[in-house]
Length: 134
Image 1: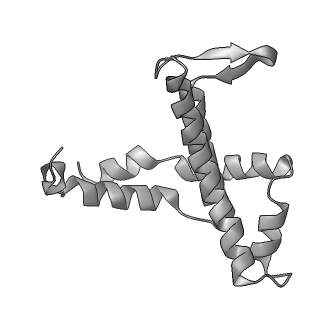
Image 2 (image 1 turned 30 degrees about the horizontal axis):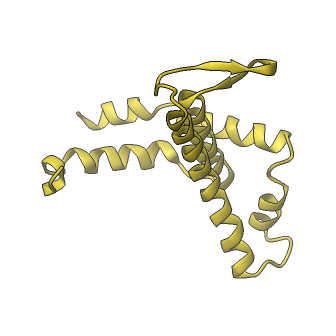
Image 3 (image 1 turned 120 degrees about the vertical axis):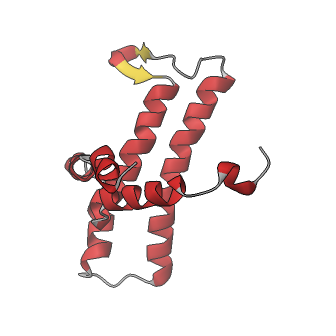
């Protein structure tokens, strides 16, 4: 793929990241992180590490929830709805993974479009199975 193709494939991720962060903020989930990033309060390096580590572990938690769907006999593509019309199933949990990752990108101003395009370019040049056994 050409450079233009990689950029086209990632177009819109930054807007989606901003929307994910805005939704988290509107629901009160960003207050501590906003204070941490603003520098308005004194936080220790341990405070920062704990907070940012927790953000990453929330992503892992969503992956675990997708895995639990499979362990309970659901199919990878199966979607269903619980009481209150809440979307459930592995696809819904995978959506939560993306939402959490993009929320982090929005919160920290990460240009996820550029980073994904860069990684896709790099990965395209890697050898088959990255010279590893399957």
